[in-house]
Amino acid sequence: MYAFDEFDERLVRERVAQFASQVERRLSGALTEDEFKPLRLKNGLYLQLHAYMLRIAIPYGALNGRKLRMLAHIADVYDRGYGHFTTRQNLQFNWPKLKDVPAILSLLADVEMHCIQTSGNCIRNVTSDHFAGVAHDEIEDPRPIAELLRQWSSLHPEFDWLGRKFKIAVTGAAQDRAVLKAHDVGVRIVRDPASQKIGYCILAGGGLGRTPMEGKVLRDFLPREKLLSYLEAVLRVFNLEGRRDNKYKARIKILVHELGIDAFRARVEEEFAAIDSPRHDVDPREFARIAAHFAPPAHESLPAVSRRLEEAVAKDEALSRFVEHNLTRHKQRGYAALTISLKPIGLPPGDLTSRQMRAIADLAEKYSFDEARVAHTQNIVLPHVRLDDVADIFAILRAEGLGEANAGLITDIISCPGLDYCALATARSIPVAQALALHFADPAKQKEIGPLSIKISGCINACGHHHIGNIGILGLEKKDAESYQITIGGDPGDSYALGELLGPGLPAEMVPEAVDRIVAVYLAQRQSGETFIETYRRLGLAPFKSAFKEIADVVA
Ligand code: HEM
Ligand code: SF4
Image (tube, rainbow, N blue to C red):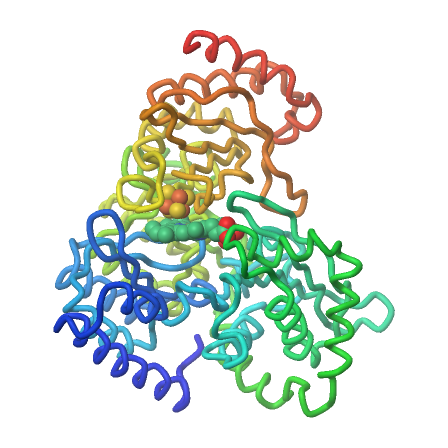
């Protein structure tokens, strides 16, 4: 894991001191809330429905025991004993008191964490594949460039006040697990077929929100040393030419759309030509210094199969389900990555109590080379676990209420905080997720349905990724009541697609029944081995729409 150097340390400590003085001035009345707002938004502090909310960056999702224990401590002392993991590999505390925020930031700094650039119109937390360094399909571990980008984008003076927020995701694998095409910029590590050299494919102009768009290829091969100067050019064009007259049109996706990708690319190349010089190239020594922090841990040489695990699985049905759904093959023989589902049936998706944080800290330290990762799916991954240890880990997870064997299944629902916390929400999303999970709780039914993603947002801002859920649910307010629109066919990965609307909105209590009918069409019409999304692509919207219409007609 990356360790702060003297510059990181100083930058974070200085920011803590600066913000402490700003909070003091707010508390004394020297600053009004309006004056304070841009200052707090530089430090991840929002004002929500009931309280302030503090968003903590977890760059590319990387956690360890110390960090998790500190988060647990903060949750107990300064919040209500839990935290909420988001779809952008951040953690949110929902109940901090303003007077305590400087103390919280200082404690976070002790474990090399901070809230800088987790809100406001700047380059946000850089996200990545939660199976980085583990996955079979990886060309190269994406974490060194994610870290390079974190350093480059932290307090970058030119991009400190962009027209709007800017989100970058990075992957090094053949399969996109980082939702690249929904980001302002996506960086994909690729190998040039001719030279076999490693470089980057750069995407731009993706985003969700009220105007969802798919990121488009800007450069299909960028040499490794040009990464920062090229991104500098992309950001500069956005900063200079992106709209600032209307905040809904201020994201890069609108600029790319309005100019067209070819004209946008030409502008970027022009800027790049002006910047490009060996002086601006990534310094290979610095890159190597960073990359050394992500060297693979000291894996043991183990057999590919664990007799111990096989025997335990044969005796324990719950463990067998856990292994089937939550265990991912590791490129190192005898190891696996385990997904800890933060979607226990009936509880708010993405929440973790302080006790559970400590339990995961123990597990990471004892069994996973002190590493844990947050996934954009609001789950946690233990990336380097010996197959021999899986049964012991599962027993602990189960005792802590973390043994749900539903990774990638219909109850592994992504949900934003919605109207339970969020000041922008038009409807609740957590209770809808809870009701759906309870409705589909039966493990045999979940297994029968197979991989299917449900994603829920409590307003058009789409923080819960509803556009790209196989089934997407958007909560709106209609005639003073909550109303839920359902889309199907969304896909966050390589076959990126935005879902299509099935029909009019439904009241919350009818959502499980509606999803049931959609699933029934799939189960009745799927061909052997087809997943939900594959059946949808073969059949199109029509059969799902007519099944949905029956239920929508009841409401009308
Ligand atoms: C509770 C306070 C939050 C506020 C005020 C907020 C605000 C917003 C807004 C205004 C947008 C739309 C941006 C645009 O269209 O230009 C947005 C998008 C987004 N937010 Fe949030 N959000 C909050 C919480 C969250 C949470 C909890 C998550 C993760 C679960 C999240 C992840 C995202 C993502 C993934 C997007 C869409 C990607 C994009 O186009 O930027 N946000 N948020
Ligand atoms: S989608 Fe809307 S309700 Fe949900 S967190 Fe984002 S802004 Fe809030």
